Image (cartoon, rainbow, N blue to C red; front, side, top):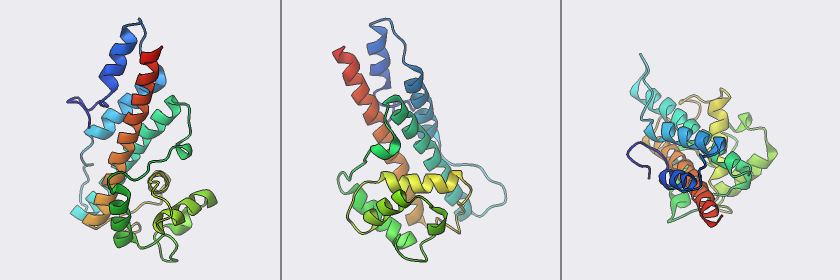
Amino acid sequence: MADANYYPDNWKDYVNCLKETGRAPPRNWAIFAARYRAASAYQMAVFMQLSDKLKAGYSVGMGLLLSYSAFEAACRASMCETYQVEIPSSNGFAVECRKKLIMSFGRFGEEDFPLRGALTSSQLRKKLDAFFVNESDDLVPIASAFRHLFAHGHWTPVGTKTLSDSACSAIEMLAQLLRMKGDELLSDELDKTMKQ
């Protein structure tokens, strides 16, 4: 997915294409590349005196936050909002992710769904409902919800039920997909640049 230095796949080609015309990458694309690099290079946070399951739960949350930050930067550089970008299922990715999420968390519409009360956006709630009942394969809403919960202090591995390998795997899948979508947006920008 990324080169040996963890940059996006298309970054080197994009930089070289701009160099041919005497330009440097615009600031927003450079921010995306830096955030992507940090997210791709991230392995796990180091915690003292926490169980392995707690470490894993917090670590996947941090990894998702880094990947979402890169995705947001790519959206900003592409002059679109994150909620305008859909990440549809490819090769059954959404199906597998949904299955792991339901196994770990239950369905969003259920009253005991972890952190349901922490999500106040009615638009996000509708999109999550559609995802969990197979009406949508767009993975941005679920990634956005977890990012929101982690960044705004509602995330705990026990509260989010991210103590299981299945839950951690689903969140890692979401993080990877966000980075891939950011690289795809960069690829679109590269195509536009090459046509200029």
